[in-house]
Image (cartoon, rainbow, N blue to C red; front, side, top):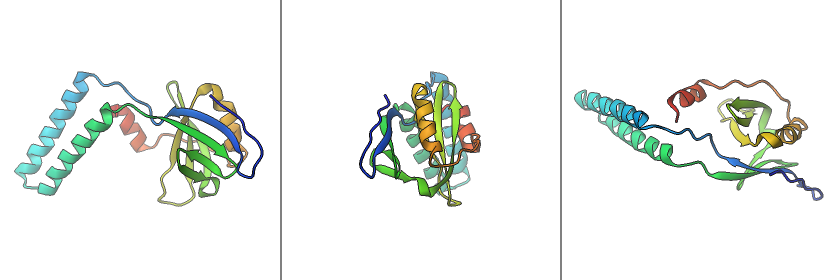
Length: 161
């Protein structure tokens, strides 16, 4: 659902709701394969007496399982004259050099490319029917450039995380 607002200095331009990430259904085989890999890594690290690595593998495996079974939250987004508001987080336009659009199946996302070298890019999903209005609003404030999924995005998609 997209709404327009006007007036005020920090007027909202566009509002929408979307899931925070693309949730991929995992079959029992995924969990079995994951458990096998985790057990092999733990066994290898115990054999080599790499205790820190053992703790890292166990902690990472538990965190990944919790993350993989948790469905995505529905977040509310707003574009204003200052930037993108995601819940209580404001991403100011001035902190980003450009934006691009990614499509993953039926899902569309805006990717904000940061000005600072080691800052993280921001990916925000949006409904297809609202896409033109959202892209136009970003385009009025930031230059658009082509974006491709980076290595980590490809790994996440491949592993269905």
